[in-house]
Image 1 (cartoon, one colour):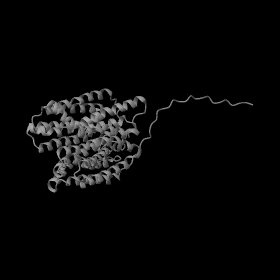
Image 2: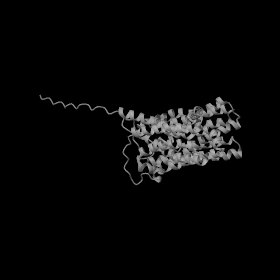
Image 3: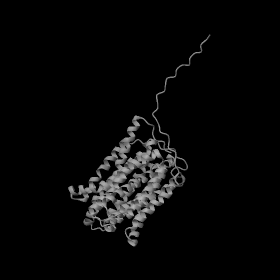
Image 4: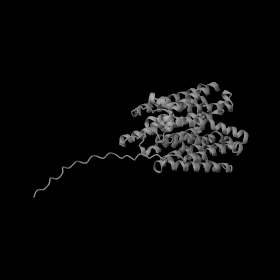
Length: 421
């Protein structure tokens, strides 16, 4: 298991700098992924697309994200974390900028698919690097910080950023070009600052899927990720239609309610993973699933009051995004040796994205078409309840003891000479 870095003043500054850069980079991943949603009405009119095309765009990114993450373990072993980390965020930013040149749905689908490959490469690598630069007693907290900007930039501030840039530029193409610039800047800083640790010595089991599946909670984490993302992605994809078409909220009220997803996920990841450093992973995960299930149940019977729906959705994302962070982060990293960490992280992220991000919204869409829009909440509830049952099977891994700074050695005094009579 990764033992982290020794605690010195220099390493503490390095740790904080790296976590900040990784957090900003992952926030841009969220922005690049979700900013197309508020821009789509303009893109749809300009390129003569329809809502089915939006489904193709979402599915292309989700599936290539998952497939990329699945194979990223061997890529990291060959190229190293530094090259994968910097290249993935730089190429992602360029592809986001190239979206400004798209002339039809085919070009956008290809670009979104390529973006998914880059995001699928960056996600497990950034988790591995965060784990690498973190002290053991700060691992959960740092992973929460590293992933916290994904929902706030992608789901909460993203629509506002898109609307503002669209207003001042008058072109959705200009918006894509502008948001590509910060990623290139961050890639340069990561290349300059990141100092990767020497790769662990390879052994016969290093990097193999079978060895990763057999280690600790890894196979269970894949199922838990599927459950978490079933709840979260179904709500992200289908809840706007539920609020407007079933609850008859106005568009502005719906946007207010949906913004709770990003805000709750941001604050939750700053708090809950850090608490698991103190209280243990298993009890915190079980309580989060229990609370999530209760909140989905309340959402099913909730009246159409925007402030109440905002509060329920805020708390739901508060716990759900924290579950994502803990599952792909410390629950996985503390289950495997450093040699297996790239493979284990990749398969947990990859299978979770493919099943939870690709399959679950399709199931929810089928249920909505055949049984009505309220049925999507029962799909989300089934994910939370299944995750709660699986959380009871988790094996609590012993956290490494907190490290303290090395004290200066005390001078060795000579032994007193025996006195003679």
